[in-house]
Image (cartoon, rainbow, N blue to C red; front, side, top):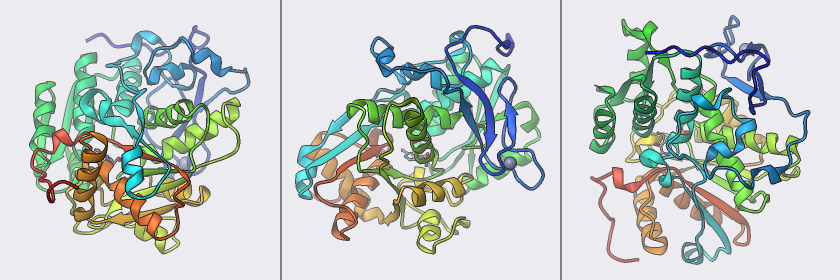
Length: 405
Ligand SMILES: Cc1ncc(COP(=O)(O)O)c(C=O)c1O
Ligand SMILES: [Zn+2]
């Protein structure tokens, strides 16, 4: 396979990506070679992409742009357009959800429907970006530990770019997640355990040096794909920022990414200083972030015996735990755990009120929203965005809880 040379300094590109900066110690890293996490001794924290904001970028420039996440081209890290691997990810609908809102007496409720992405989940954004950038820097094979959706998305973008994909997935993940990886030609290894065990097996695998590891936040660019959800929410609301964003949190990349997008948009002058309160939703059976938040800690611990039907939330330890907790505190947000029964009820309510068959992870945001209203944390009049991160169609085994609502 052809290896791609990095973009030469000074080559013509719309991207304003300049370098990477460590989220822990601030050390700087070059943008034109493969990077993983901070390599300073004792640090090892995720790296964040930094852009040049000195030149103005009027938002009217977006008007004629492609209807995908690539419309925010200047704020994305891929240098040369020729390296973009796109299946049309992003610019998913932000659906006003009036009938669902009415169930809880709310007035301004929206669902950002990420199931409309290629491979039917928001993971398409991060993996389109990460695989495009990796390929630009000469990578020919990628590896991922996955709760399901990320494996499918990696497989699809690797297929499109002619890269090898190696996917490690818990054996009890619903069948459709396995089928799609195989269809896309990935090598799929099923693991008796959780995503954390998949990660451990990859670390010990004899082939690991031949594979580029695209685990959540262990390379910097999935975050850059996920942040585009933040850009889109603001643009779709007419460059307004909602009061609250509710996000189903496993590894937390989307939550961190949306927050990063808001900071960037303020630097660009596209939005003001208003920020939404960010809510991380987890399942009662796997709630490391919720526990850390409630205990006032800045770091989460490994959550033992993780179990929930929302497989994407079965992440007992998030590599970006410090960043997630920082966003929750800075935004005046909160963290909520909901039960599997509440999730199943929410899947059905959203389906019957809005005609959307959402993933259980997405439904968890509605279950959390109702709890926050009851607790008085959320007001009925507030503008709230729920992230439906994936599609219910992949979870063939999930049964409705009862009859019509
Ligand atoms: C549908 C869905 N929602 C949410 C998540 C959690 O996402 P993140 O790891 O970005 O927090 C996942 C992860 O697999 C998922 O598949
Ligand atoms: Zn560092």
